[in-house]
Every structure is written in C-alpha cells, then in structure tokens.
Length: 343
Length: 259
Image 1 (cartoon, rainbow over the protein chains, first blue to last red):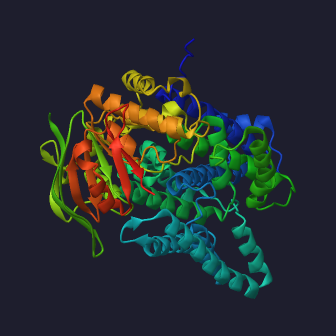
Image 2: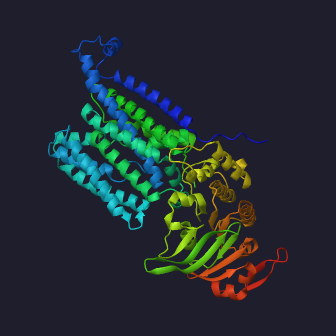
C-alpha cells in the first residue's frame, strides 16, 4: 500500500498560521490593555472607541498614554527577540544561540549603565548610549571574529562570549560603585523594563522591526540550507558569505535598537524559536513568522503579569519570562522532545 | 560523448603550499570517473575546484563551454551537484524536505516548491528506493539510507555533473555495494558525469569507466581500471606492497594487500 505523501510546506499554510497567530496577538493585546492596577470598566473602554468618553477622563490617559505604548513595545520587542533568535540559531547552527550572543546585550547594557550612572534621562540619553554600545560590540565581535577566509561561526561565537564577559566585568564595576537610587534603575534595566515606553521611539522601532522581518524572511530558504552546514548550502547555490553578512547585520541592528528601548529581556529569544520549532517544524519560511508572532504574544502576556502580579508595584519583565518560561520549556522538552538532533 | 567539466592545467595553493599542480582532466556525460589516491593527495581539493568552491590560481575550469568562474553560484548549482564527505543535519527536517532542498537553485527567492518540484523530488526518492522514508526525520534513518537520500537530493537538483566525496566511507559492505550500483545505474540513465572519490579500490575498479590516480596534487595515471590498477602503480602511490589479480566474477582488477 502506498502511503499518502504529506504535502510539503505551502504558502497558504504559512499565511493561515500567521493569520491565526495575528488573531491571538490582537486578543492578548486587548486583554492586556484592560488589565492593570487601575480598574477600567468595559463601558469606559467602549466609550473610548466610540468617542463617548470625555477627553479628560483618566481612563483615556491610562489606556492611550500608558498601557497602549507599553503593550505595543512588548509586542515589538517580543517579535524582534524571537526573530533574532530563530535566525541566529540557524546561522550559527547552535541551539544555545540567542539574539544576545554576539555581544549586543553586554554592549547595550554597558551603554545604558554608563548613561544611568551619569544621570542621563530614560527618554533619550540612556537608549542612545545603549544603542551605540550594542553596535560597537557587534562591530567589535565581527571585526575580531572574521578571518581572511570569511566569517566562521565558531570563532564569531567565541569572540562574542569573550566580549560579553569583558563588558559584564565593566558593568559589575559600575554597579558596585553606584549609589542606591541608580542601582535600582540599573538592575531594572538589566532585567528588562517596558514601563518607559512612549510613542516616539516606537515610531522608530516599528519600521526597523518590520523591515528586518521582510529581509530575513527573504533569506528563509537560505537559512534552511545553512542549518545543514555552510558547505552543503554553498553547493546547493546559497551565497553563504552574503547571507551570513546580511542576516548578522540585520539582526544586530534590530536587536540593538530593541534592547536600547527595553533593557535585557532574556529567555524570549532563546526559547520561543525552540517552541515554534516543536510546533511547526524546521522550515524557516514558517518558523520565522510563527516564532516572531509567538514571541510578541508571549512577551505581552509576560509583561501583563509583571505589572499585575505584585500590583500596585511591578516586577522586571525578565524575571517573569525566565521564571515562567523555563519550567514550561522543560515540560515541553520532556513531553514533546526537542527538534534538535539527538546525536 | 559530450564533455561536462574540463580542467585545463589547473594549479591550486593554500598559502604557499601547492595542493594541485598542472591538473588536466575531462569528465563526460554518462561516465563515472573514479579518483584514487592516498590521504592528502588533493582529491577533495580537486572536487572543490570542480565545484567552483575553490578558485585555482592557475589554469581554467570549463563547465560545458563556459568558464566556471564566470557563472554565479546558483547557475553552478543548477548544473553541478556535490555530496560532501560529512553531512550533519542539525534540524529535524523530513526526508522529503531534504530532497526538496535540491530544488533550491531552480526556484526564485520567495517561490515555494510547486507540484512539478514535488513530482521531481518523489521521482528522485523512487529512483533511489527511499520513497517509503519520505515522511521520516533525517535523524531517524540509517547511514545507508541517508546516503541514498542525499543521492535523491542530488537527482532532484537535475545537474549534469555529480561530485561525490567518499559517499560510502561510513557504510558496511552491503550498503557500499548498493550505493555504488545506484550511482552506476543513475549515471547511465540520466547521462550524469560522475566524479567519485573513494578509498574502496575494488568498488572503484568495478564501477568506474576511467580512473584518475593522484599523489601529492599531481595526476600520476589516468585510464581504464585495467590500465591503471597495476601492482607497480598502486605500490608507488600508496607505498605498500599489493597483489593484483582478476576478480573471476566481474573480470575487473582485484587489489589485496600482500603481507
């Protein structure tokens, strides 16, 4: 008997799964908007949409000026971190890779902590220094890690680890010499903080994340082939050096900007790609949209918990992502098995 | 027979050490060219030069009548397929997905595989006897099955030239034979110019039309198995005493170690 052949991935499958995840995203976003320390009744929410709510009602301020930008930032950061994680894991063929592995995190943290130490504002000075720090370390890693023969994954990885260690040392120095109030701000930044979100920086982040996802989706098939080794991909027609260069730079720019606005939110960029792989298989044409949208949903949910669980005070969202995410992931790993090779 | 790859006085060096020197060679449609030589004799480098992955400092490689160096990577991949020595799949792709990757050079950047591509992949799976594995993960199949799946991917690529670097190095006798027989019948049916690097002298003798014998980056001998596989040639190249007689079943030279 001939078994029916399962159809390979089609465009319509990618679209339907993406649409489904977009609906989830909208649902989670709406739910998150109406959950919080300040109770907002449904009638006020409806009034806001229909225009019946008076312009000076505090509910309008809370929804539009505080929660909406925060939910939007969570969505973009979750989206960007997962996207970066998927691409880096494929590019470096390493299950432990996350978007921070090339030193983006420590570079950004160095910049941010320098900014906090010298008392710069969270609206301009700190994110600017964080972004500059991120770009500087990525440049450093790529410059040191590249060889004459091109960029080799293991040497880039090693360089990233070492650069991370170096900047972490400097960060610890500043933390140990900082005063109480600044220490709190620094630790918050290091564990990820979405509470400073405003629409201005979002208008910059949104197009960058969108453009990066378009570029990276364009390389989805190349990434599929790269997971089987650079030699293999090259033989099948992939321009390996160009693909690596474009993907590394695109992800680094996107993650640098993301991190400068959110602080270091760990775990999302490592785990969401694995979850998406367990659910949807290894093809990056589906994996890229699925993991990215999943990351957005996950981070909105995590941030909602972060600001409600100890209400009226808040937790850094990075605490939630790791605390909830790690056991959940272990559960899935035990029950479903990793999509990584066991050999 | 039409020539597929033409190597004209190729020399290649890493740093200051010449790995290939003055190599002149042609491969033909429907022909299996066996490459023999001790470790470090430049066999793998030769394949990489033929694939365009390495550019020789001297001489020229022609694919058909065009210089290989003038073709884009994807143009080369439409005509030359190569199976590397080691193939390690980090992600759990299905066998069908792996074979469909052979269609990569024939598709545009954002194009998904269509019915025609799936048909080609299924035919390739059929031709290599791996159709029943199509839904299995590449991690769940045996070494022999994996080599056949990689050959299926090569067929799906619809190339003119196929370069194989020790395709049977991790296989037992039965699977070695299977892979060689498969390569032989496919090369005849599909008019593929096959270049086959292997340490299995007997199997090379059995299935190659011509043999190249290399040492220290130089072609020492080139000709039919009977012409090339003499005790003098083998002892000079491999530096060990051998006995060569005729395999009564195949009529091909048979090489054994003498003491």
